[in-house]
Length: 464
Image 1 (spheres, rainbow, N blue to C red):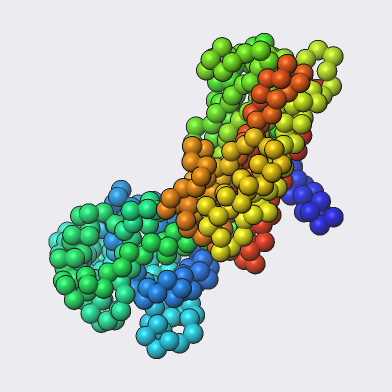
Image 2 (cartoon, helix red, strand yellow):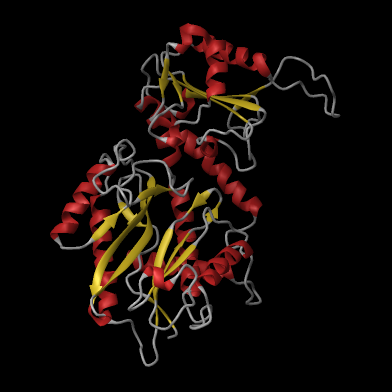
């Protein structure tokens, strides 16, 4: 009952957001860019206050140093900067220091100093330090010069000397791209400036950036539900007779319909959408790469949207009705049910503390016990479409993913439950039909897993 009420309220809200007082579509269903930025700034402060202190203490890092140059930003950049910041400023060195760690005092937001050597304060989030030298030129504001070159590295050394950290976390990893943002040039410059005393205390931060990037607030969860509601609305519109004319519309028409529709709403997408067709009696090669959609086709989409630095990832399926049909054949409906069963299995196996490989192995064992022919390749989602955290399989690695599958699920993160099952369809002469599905889920602070909105249990019907 609670789920139904929440779903109805989201649908009602989406309806209000998508129409003006005159009944015409509103171009910005998530508000203006300014309104979105205000939300993002609030989330930024809360995330750094809520998650960062505990993560630094959890992973035994009392100082975390993240240097980066303009256009060679560390993957953690989007997790620690304001929405008005699009790139590092010349060079920006972000320093986080847990000043309570040495005494063993309880960790609080006040324990962690946040210093930006170069760049801005990010709306007051960091203590921004500038050069002590006057600017050589004057652009009319009389400001001091920015930190530059060796002066910047020496400023970092001063910060480190003053604080005497036991462990200096750096973003270097051979396993996780999200933890490997320290470029070779920045490592060289930092190492030269700090010397052996401090470089001997370097430790690969590894899980620290991975988990900070993955961590999401309850306020972001509510926003994510609205994003998924919009995705559902758009996929239902795309897979309908409003958009598709059987015998005329090509799959590429739907790809560009999605791109244009999302753009018209003032939103973005993080990957090129795809539309595929399965057809009775035809192989994939026979159907071709850009077929005209015909009655009797099974359609599949892989789509996403990006709003306020957050991303969705969704795959839905549809059936194009033949003349005289009011529903898809029972065999196709059963194929989708098999995929739903596999979704239930995977979701029930996800819980904080388990590795992606453990979840994959348990899910596949249960899948085989239920004689489902399927593949599991689920991944985190959030600040990145293929997000930070443990992989639950890859489509071509079903026995586990070394390294990336060994990370552990944490509370307050999101997943895209991506998988497929393949089922013989009697009405198609036993032809095997693939039902690939992808729906986003939220793991809340208590570790409970729920669909961000809902999952597809009935094929969309084109031509009804």
